[in-house]
Length: 559
Image (cartoon, rainbow, N blue to C red; front, side, top):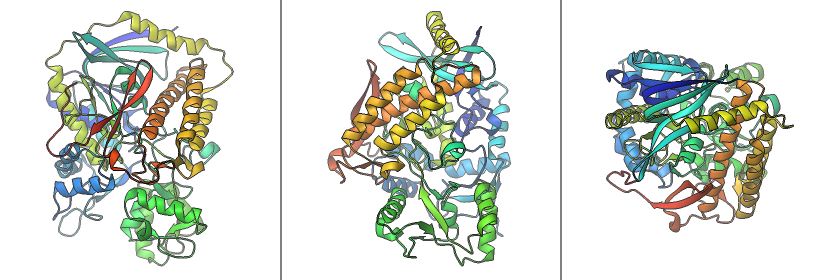
């Protein structure tokens, strides 16, 4: 029997990762009730759970915020929101100093200046960065943290001709408790989407991937269902990573200046371009041409640089350090590299919710921050924190002018009935089996590793049809306990994101970003698509639309 609990709060933050924790911390100065709902535990949840060794959005002396905007715009081939990028770039250095005040160790030179890596990031000892952010969130005396609670849907209410957010529903992942949460405003900080495609490593090691395997696109799915608009999902992210361990390569490429070389020892990175997608594109093309495997040329870097790399990877990817210990370090052999499967992540590309400069979505009262917010690529950790701060301030301002909504008892009963149906189901399939089927479909028909990231209209049509079949099958998946129920809902979230992604890939009839959006039917860039591709859910169907580029000034919703 499921136990139902009602909770009232002024601001609900869904997701206790990077942006969510910082949003909660920034609301401490206000006398507002704040509720953080996190399906894991905020102490070690989200993308920073295992730590990080650099803050990749920082502006070194001699550069301006506008330089960062230009860098991100160029890397995103123009499909970015300058206004969002500027609000981030103007604040990343201040946020970095605030992180240091929280206790984060930032490396400094003899003169007390931050040690930079290039002009856009600083080196840190960041194994404990997530516990520090969790502590900052808990110091908000008006904040309540609900760990192990999975939010599954957003509430909305009609007021005149306008619909606004009114809270959310969710369930405990440890007990049979269902939560009915009323809120004046909601901040989505649920991260992006991993696990849509078949990953590099099979079987037991399938979750050894670049992006957090627990980020399922939940925010995208529930926001889309509630009526919010998504943007630029077709700008997928594929990471260039160390083979097998899927450890980051930027620390090697930037830290010791390692070049990308093929099996013949030829430097190929300048042949294809040095932007993020071009680096991966070159690796794929060299392998297709039979000149692989490909590597970062580290052999001969010296013992001192090798020791620096080994220490750096202990902070974020210890598996790579262990591999070096077992097989020989980077001074004795080059580091083999490969591309990952695609992800949807607004911290690296422009995919996510279509938001105003206040980070409000097109659904009034619903705000988005971090990887779930679109339009501002290359935001990384400090950019996600900036967006958490902006969303917190805007949500607090919004909450002042609205009343706490009444509970919709009928809708609550309907959601509880859906949960109970999974507990009662005796269906033969399990969530893990459908997840593998989904990943196989996306891999083979929607531009995964199997096809060197290429897709076309015919393949996307197959993907669309087969994903819809899986969505129908997922309705009757069985769950023996709350944890298995979590896996069922995570699968349903991923399937919804797959549906939206397929429509976005089909709608952009060009190849603007090699690998990230490699359309075999339209292999060239087209000025007809100097625009954003957005999507909405209308009558059960995901419809795409075009929005003109925002150039200069700022964009605000007219709803």
